[in-house]
Structure formats: structure tokens, C-alpha cells
Length: 592
Image (tube, one colour):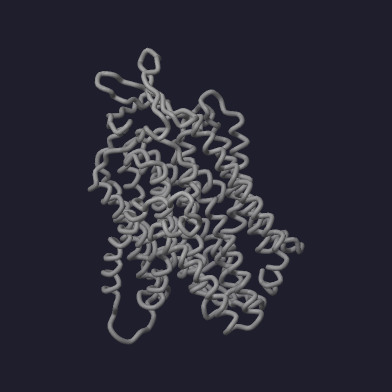
């Protein structure tokens, strides 16, 4: 892992050795491009995943968002193992190549989804066929009862009305007596889960080690390090910028397989940049010097065998029973699937143990710096929990309660709305960089805790802006796309206050001996956040039939209620962190 000095001494400048790229080592250009194409594949796939689960496999909102949250959680958990294996055995370069191959195979596997699941409804124990008319924007669902075709409408009180073609009410189903489902292939469901497992394992090898290679380009104390990581961070958003437009468009115009296939091609191109580097990366990310037998083949084999283990975690996540009402927090924790127990248990144990170790072996200053890092890591969980609604509840909101027309010229797809975040990051990152530099020269740059607090308040403000826009919906119960764009604008500004400085902050505050472990804890915090994000999105679950909601007003009211609550909570937590910032800044002992 990257290990710059962890004390508060001024950083030293380092002259470039050899040709440079915008004042940085020329190898940064290849690593930048490699990361850009890898993120092209990942974010292209992610833009499709929630809608793929909801509309192709016809999973309920609860299952869809829970599975999405579990997947993204594992994407950030597996780097803990992948980074360790690279540090001790494989080296970063071989790890990146292996991860790229495994991820591309996962994306290609997602291309094979079989036939769309067949919707049905169970009413008072009797199963009926359901048809969805997709020729109109409303996508009306119908129950087929013999020779009768009854339109389905969910009501605000939880009942369901079945309406005959002449407009008369044929039947009103009591709350809880109408159960929608999808008849899906168990084989293709297994194939999809295996594909997600391959992506999660492959990402564990790719994600931490491409960043580690960037860190090796700079000597300890090189003042260009933060700027280099900022440029590298831009590669992430450039890749996602284009894939989140192209992959959803292909999925609609051609088919799901085409969207996932383009993501796979982007991933393969990323692999080729490292595999055929023409010697440009020689000496960077090489395996550590170890005596004895080369264990690389064994590690590759065990990693492939880890795929069915991850598949089992997904199956367990989907089939975990809900906690019984009145069982309290203990009952809730006991009812968590294995993945939830693993994530929460590891995080809850790791933070205090690291602090206890720091107090025993470190100086008072080192302990306080570690304490500041751990506090910020905990607040980081809250930020990403809410920010990562983008891929789940906000994508479903875009699909159901957003008018996706752009000035009447063309219509975006729901998956393409995630493009706004990447666009705003690319557009605003240079401005923020200039702004922080200008403020620093005048002594007004906010401290890291204040930036974190502003980010938390900002993500809450974005949700409240969308709630405000919901006051202006028409008879179709849809907000204009510009309210959603405003949310992403505010969220992107919040992201720029926390994400680029997070990894750098960890390396500066951590005791040098365990900076790798602290980097792992940072990724673990994001992993926990992704899982919790899926749980939050489940609160916004809406009853669907055939992958479509039965009442857009109920859907809008549900989303607005959840977004209002988490918006207020996030702003409150952000204000709390700003109030605590003087104490945390004191613990940081001059680290900026």
C-alpha cells in the first residue's frame, strides 16, 4: 500500500526521473487509462444491474436492492484480501491482470440471462397469469382470470383494485392478499449470481493494487502525490461518464446482453494495457523478493474456488428470513444474513482493536492521530450509505417517478441518469482543486473534518432538493429530470469534499507500521456503507407487478418520505461533525 510519512513534518519535493506526463511520471498516463477502462466496464455494468434484477428477473424491490447492496459491499470487501496477497506474493501488476481477466469473464457471463421471467400474482392462494402492456408509457399490468383481463391498480391503503375493460371494479383485494412474483429460471439465476461473484473476486485483485501502483510512482514526501491521485481519480469518472450513457442505451436498443457485453470489452481493453505495456511499467508492481516456491498458481486456483463461496453468500442473502417484529436490535442482528454478520462484526471489532493497539504501542500523538482517522472512517460510512442510493433507490425512482425527457428532444433511460454524477465530477474537479489551493494560500482552507461534515450535509441537501421538486409533479406523478440532475450536482460537490482526500488522509494519520491495515479498514467502511445502503433502499421498496409499480402516487409518496428522512438525518450528522471538528483537528496534530 501507499505509505507516505505518517507524521506532521512538511513534505519534501521530489524531482521527476525521466520523461514526465503533465509534470508527473509518464507511467501515470498508462495507469490512468487502465483505470479509466476498468471503471468503464464496472460502472457500465452497475448502471444496468438494479434494473436488470427488477425488470428481467422480476425480483421484488426488497430483493433487488438487497442483492445490489450485497454485491457492492463485496466489491469493497474483497480488496482487503487482494491487497494482502499482492503485497506478500503476487505483486500489484500480476494481481491487476488476474483481476481484470476474472471481471471481464463475469461481465461476459452476465450476457447470458435467458428469457425474461414470467410475472404472476397469487390472490387468496390462487395463482393467476399477469400480462404487462409495454406499448404505452404507463406499462399497465393485467391479471388474466379465465377470459377476463383485469387491470391492476394498487391503492394507498394497501388494497389492490382489479378493473374490468368497461371501467367497473371487478374485485378489490385486501391488503396482504395480493402477492406478485416472477417465474424465473433457477439455472439462469445461478448463472447471474456466479457472474456477480466473479466480478466481486476479480475486483478484489484489481481495485487496491492499481492504486498501489500509482503510489509507487512517487517517493516518500513527494508533494505531487496528492495531485497524482487526483488525476488518477479523474480517470475513474471519465470511464464511468461514457459507459453510463452507452451501456444503458445498448441495453434498451439491442438487449441486456449488449450492455453487459460492452462493459466486458472495456474491461478486456483495460487488461490489455497492463499485459502489453511495452516495458513501460517494468519495475513497478513487481512481486516481492521471496525465497522458496512460487505460490502464484495456487493463489489463482484458490481465488477461482472462492467464487462459489461468494455465490453461497449471495444465495444466503436472498433467502435470509426477516427479523420477527418486537425482537429488538439483538433479534435484528441475529437475523442478518451471513454477509451482514461478517461485515458488521468485522468492522465493530476492528475499530476498537486498532485503537487499543495504537494506545499500547504508539505515542500519545500517534494514538490521537489514529483516533482522528477512526472517527472520520465512521462518519465515512454514513456518507457512502446515503450517496450510494444512486445505483439502487434513485435508479428505481428515475425509472418510475421521473420524466426522463430532455427538452423534448430525446428521452434518457433510467440507467443513464447515473451519468450526471460522473459528468459533474469531471466538470467540477478542476474548480475544486483551484478553490482549495486558493483558500490554502490565504489560510482559509477547511480542515479535513470540516470537509467531511460539509460532504455529509451536502448529500442530505441533495435529497431535500429532490423532495422539493416532488411538490411540482403533474398528474403523472413524475418530477422533471432536472430535479434529479440537481440532486446529482449537489451530491457530486459533496463527493469532491470527501472522496479525493480520504485515502490520502488515511496514509497521513496512520502509524506507518499498519498503514496497509488502515487502508483496509477504509475500504471496509465503504463496504459496510454499501451493505447498509441496500438496507436503506429496502425501506423505499414499492410493491411491483411484472417489474412495474401499480400506483405511481404511492411510489412517489414512498420515495419522498424516505428521502426526506435521510436528508434531514444526514444534514444533522454533518452539522455534528463540523461542531466536533476543532477537537478532531487537534488530534490530527497539524496534518492537512
